[in-house]
Image 1: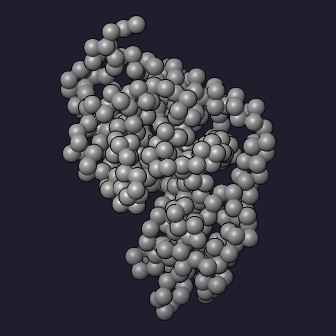
Image 2: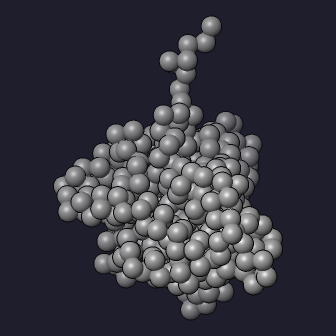
Length: 337
Ligand code: TRP
């Protein structure tokens, strides 16, 4: 009989770019779900600082946001003893495997990436090589750890698909070097839309519709009061993402922070208008974010602790990454040192 104690856990890996302050969409759509998985999976989470410089950054801001993001991961419930938390640039194997995978990815494939097309259009003054080959670095991030699952949002699915194509090509030439990863799009993970424009994902680039984890409570309150609702005549709290995208988005948020179902929410606000519902969602969000914000502040004062976390994380990550990289070097014909 199989001894479950000795069966290795499945591996999961994901990263977020420290290109902006973390917001409610990052929390409810990703990090909150990550925190619940340590029991079942061997998890790696990193700050994708190397990806961030594909768009020009202010160095001091990048440094601050990278450490702040680590503090927020921990404050959101990711226990560094049970998850490997690290900074991408601390693990040099990412850059090394990234280069190699560049040579196994076609110009045509990279040209089809919708995120490249979007970002190139938005940053026309800086359409650099890194922006174009970014999916190869992302493939390296993933493949170094041989994960079973890669939790990502819809917008990153195409990059995971490309990673799968690279695996197929590479393994086709050299044998089973990389494990085939699967994108993991959790059913429970809320897809949070912008408060000011509920037809697009909540994003830091639309700050008036975006609730940041570290934002003052008055600002959060105001953003929810001003949240765009729908112009239908019934004006009742009812879940219908097609016809009532604004209210449905607020219901998704309220459901994620209170654990109540859509049915329960509809009952709770029966006979009441949006003027009651919107501030109620704001207050529930404020209650959820308060302990996270306080814990983040506390952690940010303890620089020595945060340093010890990212050092230990880089060490654990490097150990795993190096094993994969050695194998790759050998297979492709590099002389062993
Ligand atoms: N590209 C992802 C994003 O912009 C971040 C990322 C980088 C990532 N490397 C990754 C996500 C590896 C999952 C796995 O959101």
